[in-house]
Image (spheres, one colour):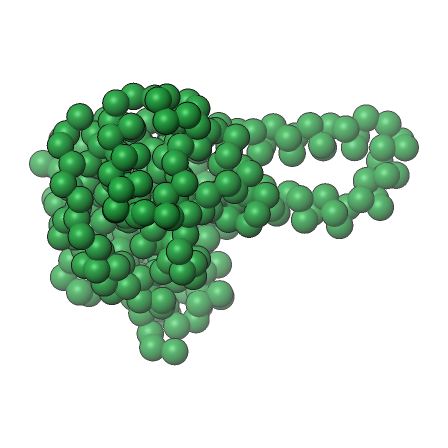
Length: 343
């Protein structure tokens, strides 16, 4: 296996740099062919690497004291964060020193910096955040998950094309089904930009692959392979799903502790419960892709733990190993960009 290099924003996230270094250590065990560039204060990172000697052999610290604050506005972060750990990680990808960047930092700042440093692919106006969702049928792709709060019809059509290419490249689907998230499945439902986008997708951008509007309960059902929506709705859906998974897991734990018989029942049900917990664990699906960029950037959940961050690193590795960027460039080039007036 050819060695690859990943650039990590060591100071991104609620528990950085500890979680980033521990996550990289877990990822190193999974992917021994990966080298890491860790961007952040040397004084904070070096002691952590000293406790992870195997990781230290494949990791290089790139010192910077500049960190993007979790509440920094994207425009301010873009102007003032040129020497930040987040920006330098992205610059490493832009300059070809690393094949992908991973950050658990400020989402808005990461998107703004990534768009500036990596640029967008031809025909793409705005990048979108995409990730996997567990469904009754397996897994589906959903985008946008928070990068673009306000979207017009053209944006939604481009997101659909990006999601289609992503599902073909990563999930291996030859003709993934695509749906627009709406308040109802009827053609007359929803905002004007949704109806315009649906018409464009139906008439030629995706053709028979576009199955029309889908509703919130279709996400978990796996009604379509790709769910397309604006960043506001997508982020609410994502956080709701994560919260619901934790709620159900908590209810199950409480139920098994309710009585002696329940505790005895848990002993027999433990293997099944472990499988269930793994299936709905948000850490398993941590690592969202910034689609539409001329480079690979992965956003980790800011509050995740080391295992979750390691999974985000795994997403970046998969993107590189499977040649995702070249494949999606080819897929987009093969499609005729639709002409859609802003709604």
